Length: 124
Image (spheres, helix red, strand yellow):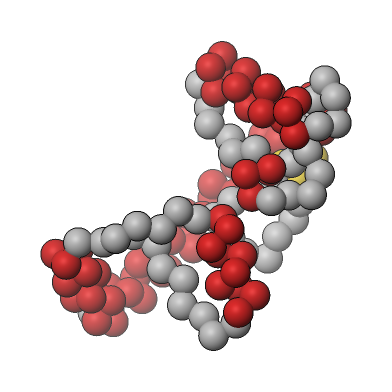
């Protein structure tokens, strides 16, 4: 379950474009409410999540650097924008989708094409 809570209309608009929203059962809502009301749990969860995310980020970016694949530095987030433009046959979103299919079916790794996040340039 993911939650976006913001009074910033721009943040909400972007979140709507980048996510699929569905109904959450009342049992799940109750469980989440109990978890979020436990301040000790929340503090520990955030601390541990930061450590794990930082470790994974370092691992992924080191690997990309080693392969000569560029990526964008960000201040926060669970995702990483990597530059695969040089792997496209043509600079089109159709070519981006074709590359995605190769990566999914041959490499067995699902990397979301930038076009699905309304990126203005194919290959990210």
